[in-house]
Image 1: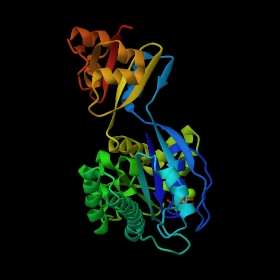
Image 2: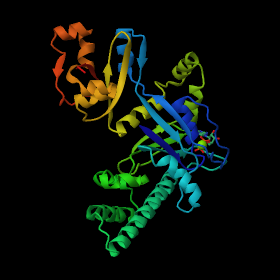
Image 3: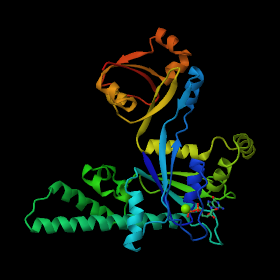
Image 4: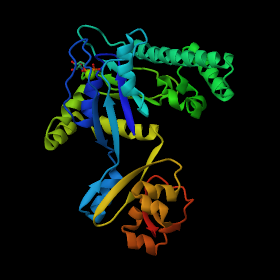
Length: 348
Ligand SMILES: Nc1nc2c(ncn2[C@@H]2O[C@H](COP(=O)(O)OP(=O)(O)O)[C@@H](O)[C@H]2O)c(=O)[nH]1
Ligand SMILES: [Mg+2]
């Protein structure tokens, strides 16, 4: 699962990327726009995994992971095709967007989060409009030449066209945005999106009112501050956070929201060797979930031995949970729930 960090040049994309990933990628100078994309795999913070790890003291604890890419530059339908192609090469495969908006003064320019948000959002919508129009033209040409095309595709594209022409993002219409017909187009405004208000150190959190477009989750992060905190030693960082009255890193929330945005949940496997979080989509059945761990487990699936995280913690340990009747045997059709601890029984 991969999220792309987008935003106007100088909005703090690389800063947020560094805060998220603990990396030290180079920041752009004023008006810069580093061309190379930064890519990092991030551990999904999960207190449940930490507590399971204390319970089992395994040799290895493996968190769920999620990828972020800091694209650099920004899309503009007005730009040359080459820079557009480059942007699209990075952004097309991402599952969702993190849209960073500047909320700090830079080189004497006061923050204008609402305008900035709208400016880039409009570019995405325009880029999609062009894609959809090109495709529609082509379909119409082919139809005129007597080639048969899927009427459903035409219908979905016409519908997209109407939305985009009104200047609205496709994600505001979730059924349309998720249409299988659109899968190949990687339309930007159809991708799920988290809005990050990147506030300066001096900004009072919560004081800036910025209304997110329909279907967009928003959160506020002091990007530079969070980035600087990730660059301290863990001991120093804890002291600093206490001083500033900060709880966990703000980026943890962003990572968790990314997970939720993509309709992802975690289940756990536990044991002396490894305690591990596995990522699956919401509404995954037990047999398919077994496949996340190993294809043999999916193929030879017999039953899933399941206990919820809450029940396990309430009982204190696995055998107590068994005695209390909290460990269930579930079949292949069982819909795995977030926080399930699963032991797959299989036979190959
Ligand atoms: N004051 C302040 N400056 C920031 C913040 N985030 C980024 N900057 C500065 O804005 C400039 C551009 O940041 P960068 O992350 O490179 O932006 P990008 O072009 O979107 O990747 C750099 O000089 C950063 O130090 C912030 O939260 N507060
Ligand atoms: Mg950058």
